[in-house]
Length: 77
Image (cartoon, rainbow, N blue to C red; front, side, top):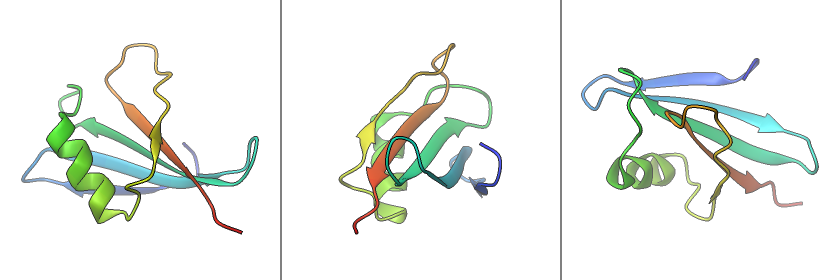
């Protein structure tokens, strides 16, 4: 995710990368993973979505190994 901003919650071991995508329509994208490469729990995901104001985001997890969870939320026009 080139051009995104990376956020680290060292206490939770959570890494979040946020950026804006334009395909097919503009949307915020948030990628979440554990810094050890483990998949994030539902509680960690909920906490991150609240922190980023993306509670209506939809998960679109297309990663090969499933260690990153990707969420997108349309940008209101």
